[in-house]
Image (cartoon, rainbow, N blue to C red):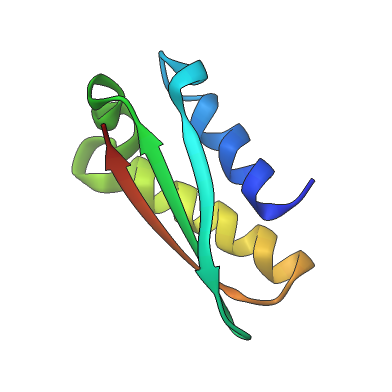
Length: 81
């Protein structure tokens, strides 16, 4: 499982419309991976969470996964459509 699949797994597990989730790598360099997460507008609150706690937790888990496998910094942008 790569970092994109892992991020997709985490996001799908907390959304109602899991079939409408999109996770893409949006360019990377030697030290950084940029990931864009797209969810439906109604799922945005679930992904962000109260005071941003879910988003912070997702970023922490993905960063830990990256550290264990690729040793790169991860930047996650969460948007809705």
